[in-house]
Amino acid sequence: LLPLERYAARFVGHPRIRSIVLKKVLPNKVLCTVEEREPVALVYAEKFYEIDEEGMVLTSDELTDYMDLPIVTGLNRRSVKEGTYCKDPQLANARRVLVICKRYGGSFANDISELRIGDNGVSVVSLKEGMVLLLGESEFENRLKKFFLIRGTIAKKEETSKLIDLRFEDQVVLRSAI
Image (tube, rainbow, N blue to C red; front, side, top):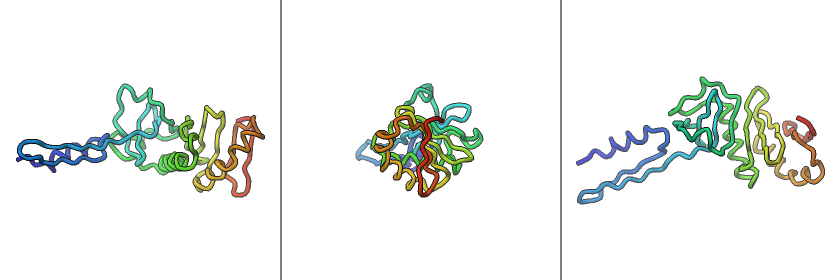
């Protein structure tokens, strides 16, 4: 008889595997169900690292550099180690922004090129729409909801707006140059 729990534990230790279920199927088979981690962004810290929605840094391979995912920049290399959860609060903020954009932003989430993290918080870059959103360090959901509500109006009236500053409670600042 195989000690299935021991084998399952070995698989779960791999960064790309979220969960695994092994079941004995009598008389002589084992059914294996694997849930893989899916990368949601690439972190650039001297090289590209894939991360999933929980912040697990996945093992990279020769295709990592070519993935069509948003790139998170501004993170210190020491914060990123393959096979571990990146606990950097700024990366957690960038992941939170991605989740909110997917929830409320429709196709905008797919158009995100870069999430910049730094001393001024999180900025979202969309090359397709030719704009940068300044979000600051908190209130991401409220600020992004505000943007998604006025996005169509901005596109119609301010075709040259390249920078949209959402860090203020009662106003949105539009600039034509970055």
